[in-house]
Image (cartoon, rainbow, N blue to C red; front, side):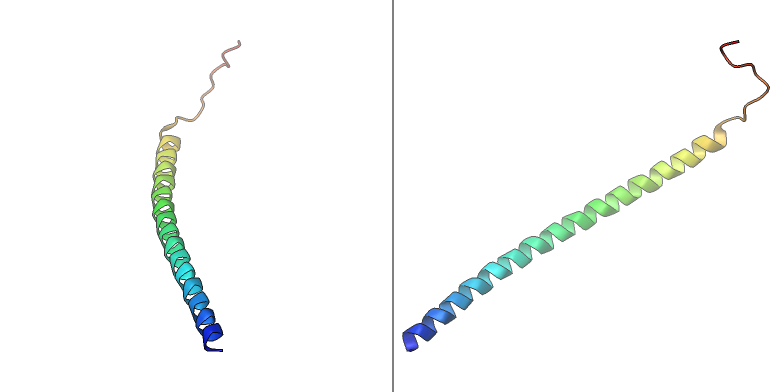
Length: 69
């Protein structure tokens, strides 16, 4: 029975080690994804600001004839 109990404990230790490695890997992945989300959010905000600026600088269409006339 002692041999069986020792074998079970070793198996559990191996499983815990694998789970700890998986948790570390997932934690690193989440950290990288948050960095990417932050960077992409800043880019979207910048592009929105640029778009608003461009829209404000566009002159309204006058009574001009279309180019095909």
